[in-house]
Length: 132
Length: 132
Length: 132
Length: 132
Image (tube, rainbow over the protein chains, first blue to last red):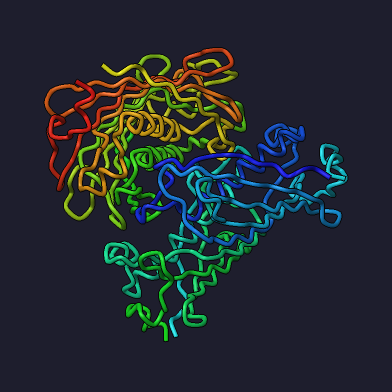
């Protein structure tokens, strides 16, 4: 079991839209960056796997937006990860504002490994053994 | 009841990531653009509402990624919309590749109106009457 | 000599920043998309060249921002292209608002072909012969 | 005279395009974020000025791309700033890779203050006095 991962980031002005708040799609950027940082710390290199013909792709996302982040705000992305069935890897992620610890968003992201366009068993990706 | 809306778009190269496919967050951009185009055709102007102090914000997104879009591919975004309870507006959206009519992604997006940080009843947004 | 290329696009809300206008970086997205569309019409496929080991990369951009585009505005991107010296390809590009024909931005973009990290002579890229 | 500002950042995977390198437009995001961070440290708040009706906008950018950044690479953005004439503020910026200190890009960015669509004298923006 891998411990929960925490990554601190802060909002950049170009990530805010004309409402003055972070655009809904940008939160997926934050979550992806946290997942890739996490995977890298487990020696799972998204870019290297791609070069070897294995693509980790997002299969499903459920995200609840609770509050909005605005210009300059610092936040923590928390990520935990586990295998589900033979194919799926689940990431449970939360974004929390640093100043008042309010929950900004929470998401469940399902990932699968794909090789030549076909789903792979997560057991075939040796880097994932650390998840067992 | 408002008929289903269709918008044709195509992938721009800068929307693809290092895997050579459209990045997961970019689909939310596509879906938002389709929603705003749709709303505008119903005379609901996202930007004008913001200037009047009413922000339409995304409350929840569920999205299933079925296939990947790649460089240059044309696709159709289909959007239908209905009210749910006193506060919520639901958008059911699909992205379909034009060449082979394959389903690329489908999503359920929940929106709410917010005024001074508080949720508004959708019945208070007169532009939404057309949805009844 | 290749005739000037024109591409019509329009602003998507997520491309506007908290000032309510299109963010300065997004204009480079528009210009790139116009260049790639143009190249594709000359049978120069950016993505296919990458797969063959040749990367067309941007070497220098000079861009003057004259006016701002805002939500929903339609605009024309005009692109012309010529070789300069043995290595460089120059794109002269303009963005013009459709409604009032005002000049929004103009740019000179210098591109080079790169293979294994080294600049290529443009004469070695057979697809570029059409530019002579 | 304000000392040169340094900001360390690193490449996020979603910022790379299908060539596996950071897309040309993303460097403008990096540069903008460094400028806004810098301005904020001088008590010039881009977002607050916007709320007061003053928009700092980019008037011209010249950028030379020397090398490409790729997935995960750390880099330093260096920014210095001075007034030029009654209207303009000039930012000289460089991006340098952290690992080998190679110059990645250098840029000259011209900014102007705009109020009700008209250029302002930089002397009218009291926050800019610190630049004298």
